[in-house]
Length: 193
Ligand SMILES: [Zn+2]
Image: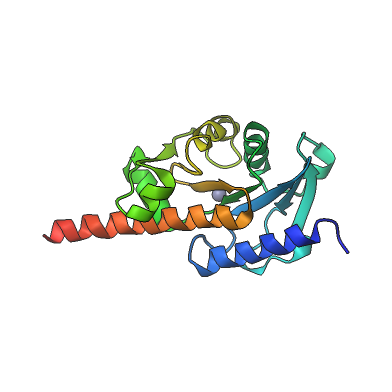
């Protein structure tokens, strides 16, 4: 049995759901969970919908160049989140289309629907950074935003959500995408008057 098999199976399941729900593109996105001082994270370059338990890399909470080699490019952001937010056990990142569209339009996303207001309050933060992929700036700034809201969006790139489980992180990612769809439809309907 491979180490952390239970966690790997959970991650595979949630990655599949993320694709099935239309929350990301075929090879975009990454996810991880924390077990004690270890991080179980998606291997770099693997398709989200076809992940197998062996497509995850195990590394440590502290940087470890040897173990980090094959991990997702966004490992630095996942790691920074785990270090700053000890209660977080899972991180999910995707390229959700309506969420990305709303990040281009709004400085912060203000949900109109009651479910997202309940989950996120009045606003979901959008982070503008010079470099958006595998970015030191995102690794530094994003954990601060996630202290206030369980999901935050990197401008023009996509949301990162956190939770006590991967399932919980999926719930937030999905609720935000739903909310951004509603925002978009509402704007369209209002225009048609
Ligand atoms: Zn990405």
